[in-house]
Every structure is written in structure tokens, then in C-alpha cells.
Image 1 (cartoon, each protein chain N blue to C red):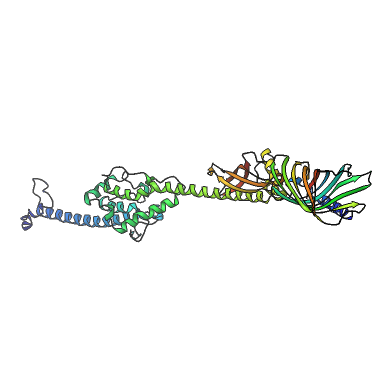
Image 2: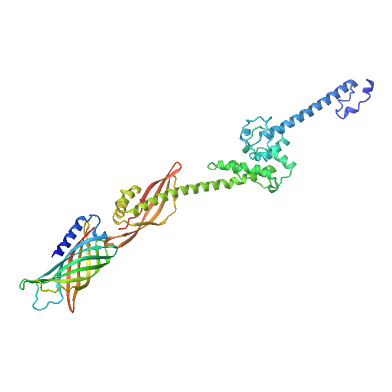
Length: 179
Length: 322
């Protein structure tokens, strides 16, 4: 929770200092925050979950069609009001992106994501082991007015925890601000 | 008396007999003396007058400016040395001719007036007296005399109409004096043309310099990009408020493209203006980091004033890419 707060403050500061110059799509550096809806590929019996939500923030560098982002992701993978438990996945990731096509106000991209994550449970019954996270997906960027751009995409990612693999599908909607 | 009267035949050779009548001896002797005196005076007079004419003609027909204008006293002026003085000219040969054949001549004729039309008689006499030597066989001194003033005259008349001497002579079998003019007048027929070509080339080079300078500033400002580049570029555009210019300025401001001229048409010279159409390639980072390339055609315009060219501006001829 403390880490999430720090990232949120950092993102807020970056957005505040961002120049209202060209659109995010024209800038080399940008910050982006996204909200996500997480769907597990397999839901074990007895662990039925409510709606799983998540978010991520990242800083992107876009020199060309290829860009790369560094960020933090927190995704709730289990929440149940009946059981009064919740589990979340925290990931520090790197996300390369390549624009496949760019029109006047939109661009289609393919992206990958890899990083290191761990589970955060409440109550704290999860292990503190760090797991590898990898995934990829597609998305569409929309140019908005000013320094803003909208990111709508989906990713499939997996968490590799020793001999256990957990797969998730996430849909996210983000807002980028050019610096 | 009787002895004198007894020699009637001797003077008959000098003075024809007045008639069938015989003059008395003293009268005949007086007439003989008067005749001899008159002949001596005539001879002296001819000698003096002839010398005067030689000196007069040599001085009066010199091509030196002050002598052409008759400012120098012909009697006291030294004879012109055609080798030492490069100015005397075409006239030199005619001067000699004049001194040999014509006793009186206008003391200050202009060089252009010395032509076959103005002195036909003297040239014909030269032809009779001396066969026309080929130009290659002419003495070096005469060659110098003939060529030097021609070059000088052409240099000073670079921007003036061709001189009269540039008229091509007609007839290969012209009089000998005309042969001299052929050698002297041949260069002007081509030299003014060459000078005009040089002037045109120099004018084109100066216009090109101004256009290149303007184009360089245009490309430099465009490559600067951003607000500064757009501001600089606005001062270089002939019509900044033009829609095409506005689009181009927006592209320069936002896209910060790399601009380079890739092709250029020939410079068009008009009365006061010089124009050149140039195609400029642009490469910039477009939306979402995608590289964009495009071209735009511009017309670089310079204007001529007095002796200098100064830039007018750059006009966009095609719609800038987006």
C-alpha cells in the first residue's frame, strides 16, 4: 500500500509538470495510468470471486514506432465478501510496444509485458516469494486533444510461481499524458 | 647685246617660245631669270609645304584622344611612333597614305571616320603603290598598333552597343586599306557577344547567390523547428498568412522536421526578379512516434535593386504534408 501511494504521487507530479505541448502521441516521454479488469483463465472451486479490478502506472519512452515503458501494476486476483479474503498481484514490469499501424488519430499496437511480481493477501496468508510475470497483447491508441491519449487494450499474462502457473486476461483503459 | 641675242636656243627648253616673234636679247634673259627664280621658289615652297604636310598628317590623324580632338598643335607635335604608342591605330596606315597622296586633309578625323568610304582615293593609291601585304606578314609593330586600341575600345564598351567597327567588312577583294580594318574590326563582332554572355552569367551568379542564401536560411530555420524555427521561418515566407504557409508553419512548430532540399529547377531571371523552384524533403516524427516523410515545393524569390540582389521570400507551391 505504501508503494502504491508512492507511485501515485510520482505519477501525479509528472502529470503536473507535463507541458501542454503537442499530443502525447508526439512526445518522447509520457506517463500513463490505466484501470484494468482482470479475468482469471481458470477459477478454482471454492474461490469464486467478485469483480476483480486493477490499475497500473508507467512512464513511457517513445523514440519511434517502438516504445518502452516501466511501471507498476496491481491487480486483484481474488476478492470475496463471503470469505472476507482478498489477494492481489503486484508487478514491476517493463512493457515494450510497437505500433503496427498509425492513422490520423489512432494507432494499433502490439505490446509485451514482463516483470517480477508477488502476491499480496489479506489476511496475510500468501508467500513472499517473487514470481515471474510475462504476457502480451494488443491495443489501440487514440489521440485526444492537448497532451492526452487514450489507450484501450487487452493482455494475457501468466504468473509463474515455482511449479504453479496462474493465467489471467486483463482489459485496460488508460490515459497517457505527454511530457 | 648682239652676243646675247645670238644665243636664242638655250632657254627654249625651259620656256616655250612665246610665239613666232623673236624677243630681243635682254628681255629674253630677264624672262629666263624670272622663270628660274620662280622655279626655285616653287621648289622651295613645295619642299616646305610637303614637309609640313607630312608632319601635319602624322599628328592630326593620331588616335590619341587629345590629338583626335585637335588639342595639340600639329606643327610642334612630334611624329607618332606607331611602335611606342599603342593608341594609334587603324589610322596609322591611312596617315601614311595621306601624307603620300593627299596634300590636304581634315586635321582631326575620328577613328571611326577612317573608313573605306571616307577615303577611297587614298586607299586606291595605296593599292597602286604597295600591294596589300597579308596580315601575317605585317610587321609586329603594326600588329600591336592595330590590336591594342580595339581591345581597349571593347573593354570600355562592355555594356554599350557594338561599335561601328564591328560591322563586318564585305568583299575579300577590297582595297588594301580595308584589309587593315578587317584585322582590326573582326574581334568586335564576337567580343560584345562574349561580354554580354559574361554579364548575363555574372548576373545569374549573383542571383543564384541571393537565392542560395535565402534557401539556406529557409532550410536552417525549418530544421530548427519548434517555436523558434517557426518564428524565424515566418520572416522568410513571402506570404506568412497564406493557408499553405500556415500549415507549413504548424508542421515546423509541432513536428520539428528535418528539412533538406532534394531537387531544384533552374533559376529564372526576369527583369527585377529571380526565382527558383525547389523541392524540399521533410522527415519528422509523427503521431505515436511513427516517422513521416513528405515533400513540399517552394519558390525562392530574390529581387534585383541597383547592383545587388536581396531576398524577397519563399512561397509555398504545394500543400505541406501532414
